[in-house]
Image (tube, rainbow, N blue to C red; front, side, top):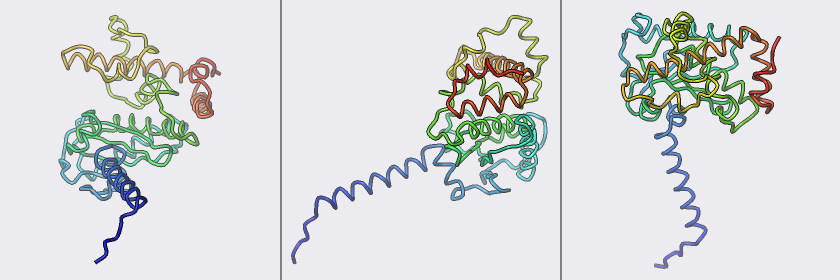
Length: 270
């Protein structure tokens, strides 16, 4: 029997094919984007279009609004949140994110134990990941605001990173306007401001400020970070009250066109 000699190009082709397969497995199994893109093939039920709930979801849970929410009640909460965010953007939403609701450790590890996460891949894929403990209209509206802003800014401008074109305090502040909870209220903001509790200038806040441990006590740390959200919310709200929805849309269009955020933020006014 004559042995066939393996040619160099065959070895290279095999190596490339193997690398592509390995990269695909890593992407779809170990990254949030890949995990969500393959959500239809995982242990989830699509209760309504683009709303996927893990099959181990706790069927009845008490959320932050003291409501009992089962699988069938989640689409109504999402619709309420969509309506709230549409008003913020002038009555119309451009994005249509996929909702992934799960406490499965596989996905929680992928998003860094944050329990809420949203992202947009260019303008093709938008996802919102939520733990069942955060299934309430305020947090859902907050995350939808993120995906709507991402979608509009990235429209026609691929491979951009939000933090490079929009500061995190504006991103989080705008999203927090959709959060009507008492802890994010104007009364709470004024109480903290009058008592001198705010420790930073809002425009100096970075992504790390919203993520890191500022103090060892986890409860106090949560209060510190909450202050950052409050500061951001009412900074952006004051700007929005002055410039209106039209100013917001002009700012977004300008950023998408490559203009500097700070020039637009301080220059757009009625």
